[in-house]
Length: 506
Image (cartoon, rainbow, N blue to C red; front, side, top):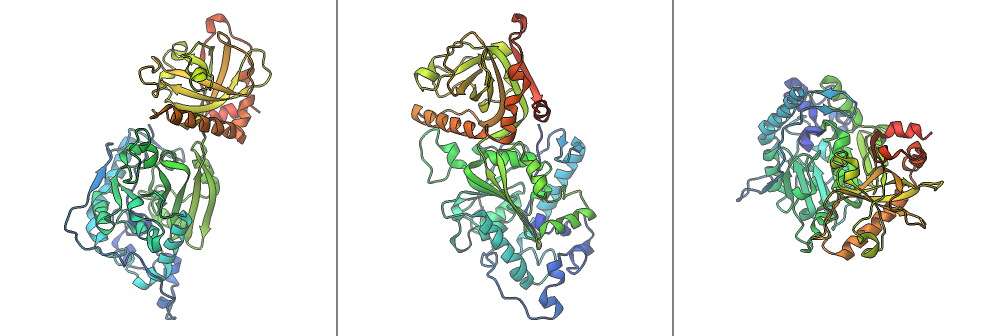
């Protein structure tokens, strides 16, 4: 499918003017040139005025010397090579050869540059040839503000995407904001991660791609429960930050969708750049080969998360500072609606008898191979029954019920719990069902009480999610009110583009 390769490093994203692969050498040894930020060109010291007040720079408080032991880097199992094709957020397709060339150039640049980047406390000495005081007076306070926007606490579990040598970790842990042992740095460049592990030995460093890394690739915190079934949730993060790296993502929408899968309920994603969107846009005018995208404005961010379980909370884009915050929401609108019509079958008797949550079941056999390609998990949508004038809200499990050990479904089953007073036994009758939102993946729970608690939460989430504008509009989809089909065409399975479906509801 569509995967993005993360161009590495907070530093590389922060000062891309230094890319020796993209810019001539003169670009990064002239701090007052056109590619340097306005705050550097007008900095008081450079104009002969008195310096601004000094700020504590946590990076300078961290030693970068060698350690006695080699740091541990965890590797995700995926290949670092890109997929065959890539669909950009802008809709421009990049072929395999171009993508491979790009990712190889990024990896080569970061690996070859790692020693130089890791040799100094800040990138200023390496890249812009700018005074240290400018970093302390201008950039460091902005990184402080970004860390504040993350809203982390001592108990927060944090994922720093594109961590590089750990620049953002210094600010996340400054003045006790967060605990170093609760931070995971994610990057593609092993030498950068090794340096970050030296500087922040209590943090965990993982090599992988945010676009497709799974929650299982991250270690369970030492404080986590030993109880089976609890560990995946305990791996999840309260905050995921993309600092000075978001413009380098091939597919920003896919990266955000996968990042959202790693979030806890109530979690947030922060996208930031301490030199701002205009600075990034200026660099892209010179060379777009490594900075694939500009930083998105509010409207563009809304579009990027349209099919992700994320809501846009805020965007600050001024004064050479960019900070956008996204918050987790339980239901994500599906890009393709799944429309099913079939005969309600007798199930295993578990929903009503064991859990008190009766379901209407549609087995896979009614839809041949179509349902086999549908990911297992919990969905929500709308259901209609013969003789009913209004559709029902429905929370739907598609899968095998793995918690019932020894009694798992023999085939993938669609189990729909209709919200509201159905008031009838409708086995053998036709049910029309539209799956419009995705809530979570199917999982095996350690106990029935844990399963029941999750189901109750799923019901609450579905009830609230289906009141949202787009999902509520789909209750008027003509598929739900069409005349009953013929016996020969009793089972129907159709995948429809969501945007087209919404137009059909108007």
